[in-house]
Image (cartoon, rainbow, N blue to C red; front, top):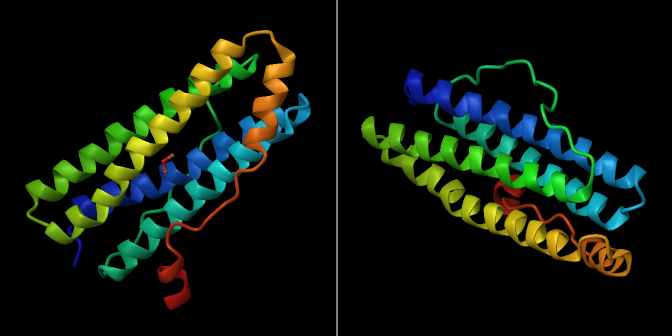
Length: 174
Ligand code: FEO
């Protein structure tokens, strides 16, 4: 059974993943309202991934015989007035997530819970990709600046992102 401190840490992260989805949905709505449907799609898919992470953690807590702790989901603290700021905040947010995931990994090791440590390793790897994706788009929008033709070209590219459930076998089994 999952120890109480790890149950609490994973529950807080389950909540934080829901909060992350909420943040990305707000960013998606902002892009949609500003004519950037491709960016809106990319952020909507990002929100769906965060929901999948939340459900994965929720199911893991139950699987380990513990009970998830439910909290209020806060509204986004981020303000943004242009697309560059949206991706500055996205990268900053993913860096916060990375720190939290690393803390959970450290706690799992401290508690000698190797199953929880292996579980959280998926997120350690995922965060490398999450930060790289946000960083790449941030660099692109910075380089594009006020060139609307290039901005719309990138918008078209981001419209192609589709949500792929990162845990399909798990979902099928449940
Ligand atoms: Fe679930 Fe973007 O980290």
